[in-house]
Structure formats: C-alpha cells, structure tokens
Figure 1 (cartoon, rainbow, N blue to C red):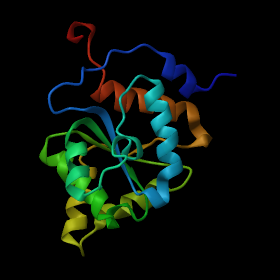
Figure 2: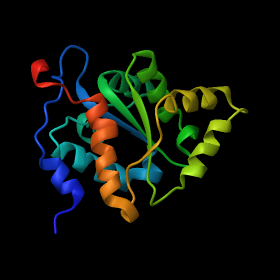
Figure 3: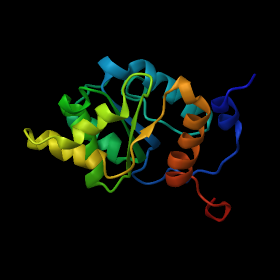
Figure 4: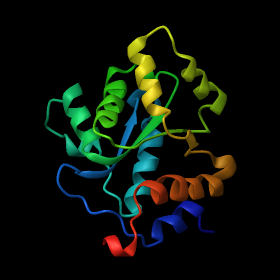
Length: 178
C-alpha cells in the first residue's frame, strides 16, 4: 500500500522560482544531535516533491561553517522550518538561523516530531524568560503555528498538514505565477 507521503510527493505543483537572493525553497533549522534522522526523512520527502531544500552537509561541503553563513542561507530561503526539540533553543546556530530568517522577512514555521516530543513540551518553550537571546528565538519561531511533521500514529494527517499548512500556504504559486 502506498503511504500518504508517497502519494503527496508525486502530486505536481508549481513552486515559486528561485531567483535573486533566494537559493532554496526550504531551510530546515534543527539541532543535529537530536533530530538528524527526522531531518533526513523530511529532506527526502520535500526533495521528492520537487523542492530545493538546503542541506548543510551537501551545500557547505568543504566550507568552514559559521553562524553568519548559516544565517545567510536561512535568509536566502523562501521558507524556514524550525524543527523543534528539547535543546533546540540552546543552540546558538538554531537561534541565529531563526533571527537571520526573521530579519530577512522569511516565513518561519515551527514544527516538531510527534514521535519524539509532545506538543505540550514544545509549548513550555513559550514561557522562556531567563535568557533574552533564547526568548527572542522562541518568539521568532512561534510567530506561526506549531505543526507535527513526524508521527506514525497519524501519518495521513501529518502528510496532509505538511502539504496544506506548510507547502501549500508558503510555497505553492498559482499557475499564473509560473
């Protein structure tokens, strides 16, 4: 049987062309030590849909990776997915990527892996008050809706949400635009 993600990835869709400073459709901001497997799954799904997704290991191979370089790539994308995890906001790179995207006016959509974290645990982050840098990054991430993008208990809903609440909302363009 075909999964909802497989069916979704084959649906033809027109995406805004990449031009000027926008080098990628999607930038996924995540804490590597916590979410690498989820990143790889999401990268595969979005790439199969025909989206150009920033991949640090591929796109920055042979470069010295700096906070400024990661901010530049986040700002140079049409959409940033903030793949939240318990220690996401402790990472200066994750915080910097969000700040870079927000400063450039790039939409930020906070997402989480329901197989790894409960929504209530993610919402605890909204109450951050001790660290102003962390609080600013949390605020930048939650300007949009929090969406579960990896949960086998409701894979069909996850696939539909990914397609309609994220891709359809931020990246699909009408046929007149292409």
